[in-house]
Length: 566
Image (cartoon, helix red, strand yellow):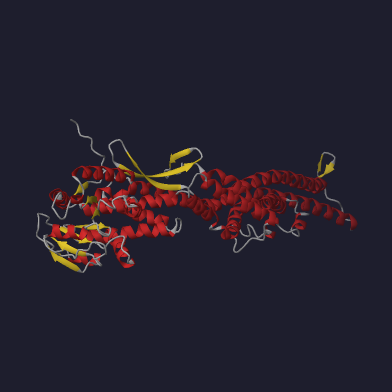
């Protein structure tokens, strides 16, 4: 017959490391109670692993009158604990040790001062604790039980035929510890008080109750501390657990899984609860289940799909930031500034100096002040209007909302906060980006220099023609003989030089202005593209970047929680 084995999960080290990382990732995002509880588990696990792993700490826990102190004495082989019938007798936990050498630090950590050596039975390595009654009328007793139930390696619940169905033990302890069935044993004590036929019915009814609690794999042993019935089976069971030296690690693994379950539940929305389900082989496991109008559905922490969320809103964000930063105004200034400088560089020398009295549009905005260095300080762009600021805020909010889609409520809130985390820094960052990017559009084209040289040559030609005519006019005024005057067709050369230089200069200036108009449009398009890219990078760094980091954080949280819960 082929045996079916449960698939082995991650190691305890892997689970602990995953839970520790999940605690760090959930800090400030998840409810403080869940995070603190998980951190307590990791700290407790670290301490328990450093203490004696050669000893197994088992605790006898039960209600008043269940006979756990009597069972403790029988297992230890001597009267170590006072026995009461109706009133709680055990005030503080005490320990019986089988080969207890090296168990001192472990018991110090458990804060169990009363310790006794025991030799009855082959239980080497067992540290057996007799706990106070969990239903004691004294609060200190109940608190001591609660404290040690969270720390011991193996829990032995001692029930009696009268109160084995008591809701107090089932609802307060057994059901919440459903994930710890591998480190739990249930003992039905005082079976000598029942007829033989009633013992089987009580054990069967107890099995049913435990199954309802999610403890399908927990062994049940019927015993009588007075007659010794069932004690041999209980001793064998304890001996096997002690000899395996695995109860401590199984307890820690169960604690880690439970803490991870609660972290996952805290990460999901408020309608999620932890339930215990069983598979076809009777094995139990914890699941997060949400009940809504459509019925029950299993809830998983899902990883964020690449390409979803904030990335699809980068364009609206960039557009809103660009308007608020005055990019249309800068683009217009680039276009006009290019034409302004082109006229100064390539215009007709006779009239170009007039252009210098007009302010450079980019200089007015303190953009592109120098071609060799970046502008210092802020630009002189007008501040964003109330409408533009509102558009930016809306775009940022839309990024957060889109990125938080399908995320659990707690992580969605963290993503929305991340989207706005650097909002106050955006105006300065965008202003710097505008200043740096627009600076590249102030560089002079090489053809301006060539046209400038040509314009001065034409101007020199015009001056030469004017000078020649001036000399001729002076000679005529002084009645000096006129030198021979060359002509170009019907026109004398001095006139050709004067008129031709002037007309050619004006024509070249007009052509240069047309080229500058076309160049200004090209530069404006390049500037607009560069500005949008630069502002897009600002949006990525100050808005989308923090959102992506938060999504990555959630992505990693879901991954490590899956490891811890596996």
